[in-house]
Length: 335
Image (cartoon, rainbow, N blue to C red; front, top):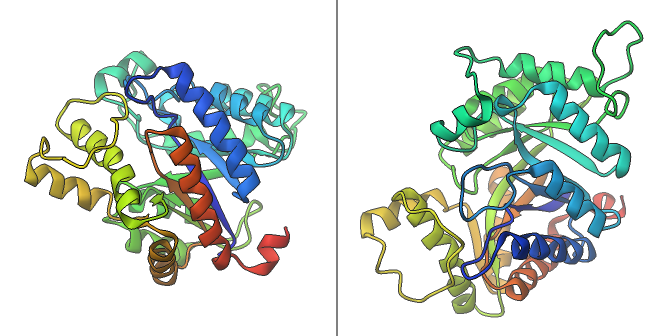
């Protein structure tokens, strides 16, 4: 494995505000940089009362300004919601302000419900133009073409690294065909993880952007001094996901020992969706990370762990970093 990273949705904590979420994200990014994390990604979601990262490029700028060298990016931007030129200008601007630090992960889903998707897009096209939009966007960020009638300014010549994100085989196939790095959303959609990895690696075509496959998998992670404390901290995410599944989204709940408000059938679905996870003390995390890394052989893992208390969230990621550093190849640590 080469790197370990963090995926952050800027969760709005129960009893807090979006301003609190942004401050927490900046503090966590600073702690992540000190702990050796390679990149810090934020994700586009809309009309979600518990997520503050809707204007993703702005939050990326906020986090990049609060840090010095950690890579910061989108995991991801939902490209069907935007014109490729606008995304190229936004990330070209970020790359100009923070050179050598910006990543652009692209997703095909709307990142919201259909009513909100219609409000975002205004005119929804019936055809799937995602592959063409990806290539158009990459062209705006590539080597300047003097003959081009439309250019992204800033953007052209910045060569912002573009990733394909996915939770099914579609993204794996597209990333392999285009020769791009691929990130799988196994932290909430584990069912196609193994098949997506095999498909991506088996069908990958070298490109001007990447010589060989580079696969990153997302997983939940909750670290604490004891297993019991880690499970308690994780209860916030379990409850938030259950409420989302039952049509009651809201801020990130405070942790609790009693989750009986969630019907057993719903909790079973939630635990399955969030099953790609490591939760526990350092020794428990060591065993669980080792199993995941041995089974899937990711080039990189990106951790998603929504914890209500900011200090506990920072401590969780510090513990996870101490464990994951044991699995990073020496040459990657030196880079």
